[in-house]
Image 1 (cartoon, helix red, strand yellow):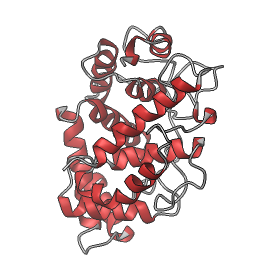
Image 2: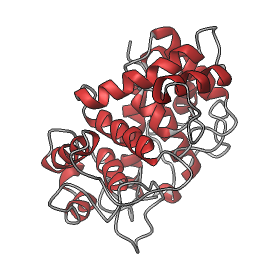
Image 3: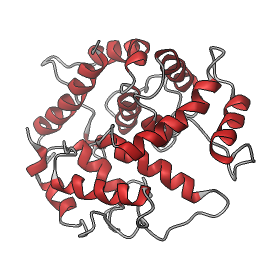
Image 4: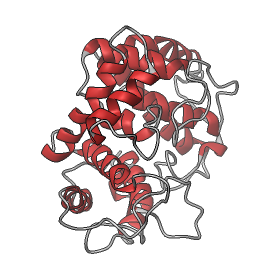
Amino acid sequence: MDHREGRWAKEILACQHADGTWGNMFHSLAQPDGKHPLTTEQALRRLMRLGFTAQDEAIRKALDCMVACLRGERKIDNYWEKGQDWAQYTRLMLSAWIRAFDPDQPEALAFARKWAEPVETAFADGKYDDVVYQTAYAQTFYDGAKPPQRANLAVLYPVQVLQGVLTQATEQRLIQYLLAGEKGIYYVYDKPLNQLPAVFASKETSRYLAAVELLAGYPAGRKLLSFVTDWLEANRDAEGQWDLGPKAKDMVYLPLSDDWRSAQFRKQDCTERIEALLNKLREE
């Protein structure tokens, strides 16, 4: 089913500005509350879930804007967080979202490859070394000077931007590190990823799946996620479908269909999402 023609997509597209952005700021992955306009990040994440790609005009406009910002030709917004290098963090966010839709965009790819350097160094001895990572990050981006803030790795943006630029060995080690972390992936899921949600039909499972979908972007790590595949297969219903329940409707990952008043459409959406994830996890 093409959700790009549905209710949710039309509502988001109606809010897009002429320059390709939404709202008055780029950054904020807080869940939409229905009272405030979407940020550009929120809109991009939701549209991606609804099946939009770089071939769609709305995404193309947003990408053109983000690339111009990455090149320093314009500013994405006037927002600035004190106490950190917000210009660097903005470059990371922009590169991550550009690569989510266009992995080979030159400027974003160059930034990703540069970030990959300290990551490769941090895992060189077979497991993650935070001291090595922080030192290598400072050397790569600040000529050895102390950065304004720590370069945390278990965050959406680094995990998203690094897809496709790490060696196979480092990919595997990164996935192992993220699975073992106590706080999941910031902005996505805040619990250990090697522990499955206690209740399958829940919003928590939906958020857990978002983290797994992110990790599934690393081919070398898919075998490490086989326990997720087994868990999903064990939770099919008698009709071979999945149902995450009505509370999974968070206006971020679900729904896809226009209306969930019928359980049929809810199951349809959940099944579509989980089948896509399983197909990704089973790729060679």
